[in-house]
Image 1 (tube, rainbow, N blue to C red):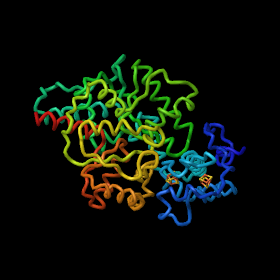
Image 2 (image 1 turned 90 degrees about the vertical axis):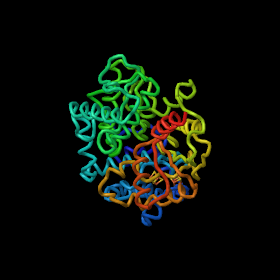
Image 3 (image 1 turned 45 degrees about the vertical axis):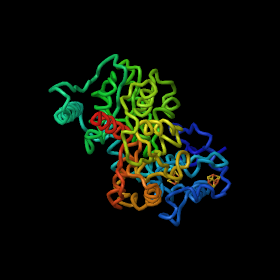
Image 4 (image 1 turned 60 degrees about the horizontal axis):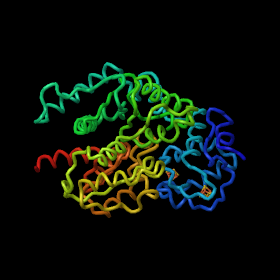
Length: 409
Ligand code: SF4
Ligand code: SF4
């Protein structure tokens, strides 16, 4: 058997593959993967099958210069039903690592990794700034809420023994503070016992983006060890597809041990609360027609399909599916570092026209998703193509429904 790391990563043991898909030589060249990739029109000279052939025939160096390995969102749709169990996420990750060892990885991603290792987040915001920003966001939110007294909303930091350590996506304290405020409201509505860490406050993993297992593992270790140090019961991921997928699916094998804490996403927590009657939702409070975009990491890779739909159904009567959905949902085109990679520019929006058309076809007023990369990409798509649809994260959608439902009473 010739494994991914032997074939692509020059036998670097730190890159060792834990997946059956590593036997890259077994590709049947059937082409099943080609028709499933949303990039096929954008790259007439490259596709998943051709990429595998390049590797099998030893043209790995050539692939280090290929834009395709950075345009690929590692969404995994192409190899979902591959008869030889090849896994494109794994193969592209190894090809990116190979490009990295040749000095051909995007500089922006490498800078983000350095910052994440030094500051606990990929933006380079330090602990003091983060605490200040979080407190400012809480104050601003409180000012706008009628039923809140001054100082009533505090952001808990480094609370040992809290039930949950909430780990945000840096977008929440940089480009999209309203999203952070949404989660603050969610914790308040549900009376959640939570804390932030001032040491590690980034769920993303750009080590995974460049396929470097050592960096990726170190970033996961930092998160897990911080949760264990604070003695929380649960590490709570924000709505972040790849970050949560890594914690849920890859962390144990990468770390070589099972984390001593439960790992769940805020969407799973909301669903748990819904079942316990702890989510103050009101049936029918949303009258618009709603659809849901399955993020590839949350849906196809983790199988979380029904929880988001049940949460939407708890407040909205009019739900329509994007087609295809669930396991076969088409990627929005913004994941796998494509959004963060300046080299990809606006191509990611051109590549996403199929997704745009599928959303428009639903006729929905609102498209909801549960990953901040998808949220950002769909927002950009909406703006670029003037789509007559609002784009919301699932928790944002629920929080607004709770607020509007309360106003109606
Ligand atoms: S579907 Fe699997 S076996 Fe068929 S060409 Fe693609 S990678 Fe090879
Ligand atoms: S973008 Fe998705 S479907 Fe296309 S090659 Fe990459 S993993 Fe496969």
